[in-house]
Length: 343
Ligand code: CP3
Image (cartoon, rainbow, N blue to C red; front, side, top):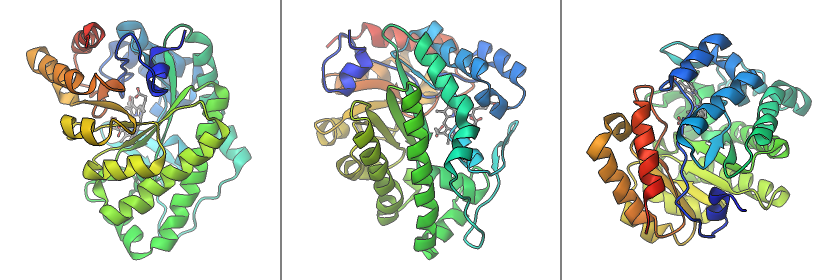
């Protein structure tokens, strides 16, 4: 039996609309907070296969979604390239900076994969444990989004440093994007070898770039990622998430070669149905704050999404990750609603 999420990603019908949630493992779950406390730092949790498997499976036990997403973070790639990465409580990530004047990290395949080996072990163990109908999603950050953290040294409001570099010295900035494109391809290929069945590439900050820079630094690297991975693994579907891309979603879908796109919560549903759904599978796009609110407001918007996009190829998800304030009961209510929806 084909798993429902795989059927939909291959353009077939499934008995119900498959669903999963970005950040379905995380601080809103008490069992996550318990495991997290045992791990030490957040990166220790990502690199401890036993604990990473456990937190990946926690939302599967509670909500029975159609897919598990590997528990890790997009910033393990700069870490594996040899940069210092840490997560400070309440502050978010801190990344050793790379800039226009300094040297770029070198991609040394043996060292890179040795550092990521615990993550490949997590994927392999998850594959072994996830029998039945639950798909296994591997992921990476997109080159642009990972570059923003490397150039800004962490999260940013205005993306000043990374835009200065990208706009003033596009050729030198392209070398950083090329390095990350290569590293991302290698990282995702190893996840597939370990057992990942579906890949999602998170371009969380795609929406801060103007048109031409978006094409150069988001769409074109994604095209190379899908082209290379599709040549090696034609049966592994790839989901792109160019968050905030707005009307440029059309361009991204046409040029990047993804099988599916994840819609952020601002994308109008009827526009997406008309402009995108005949070309790719859609995924999305409930606002995560509506899951904090719950009740009738959450249910009304979830139903509107299902009624508008559920007649074509569609995977229900959020427009961005679940936040720590989310009551788990609201996620359970939402899951029941999606499971019960019929055309
Ligand atoms: O979806 C899942 O359940 C899988 C796990 C996952 C995490 N991060 C775990 C995490 C995934 C897919 C990510 C991706 C990620 N990480 C993105 C892309 C998606 C997005 O949210 O836009 C980005 C931009 C990051 C970088 C990152 N990681 C930031 C900015 C932060 C700090 C903010 C925060 O939410 O704490 C993290 C930390 C992080 N990654 C946590 C988790 C569960 C929280 C850390 C903790 O538990 O202490």
